Image 1 (tube, rainbow, N blue to C red):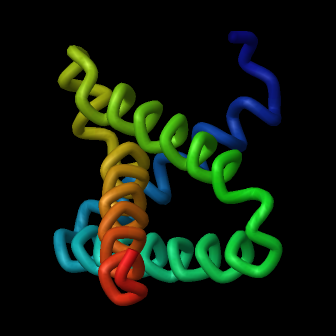
Image 2: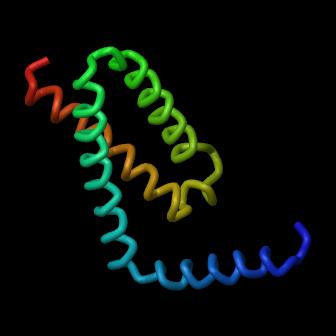
Length: 110
């Protein structure tokens, strides 16, 4: 890429965020927040699609494709990509989403 001002700005912001997330407590707390947001997202998906009951199959297909895409990204053969903070957060979000959907399905008895 060319070394434009916008590119340099993104590189500086990325470096600052990377230094900020070097602290293990911040990293773990953001992973826990992603996990809990995944559970919240599952609750929202179930509440919205349960209102009309016409989008159940479509939303299930979209969620399945999303989960498989995140699995492909998180468990790819590239170890550098697997250790990326953003991929770890996406994986925690996916785990929370899956757990939330299973939890809500067992609560509803279906």
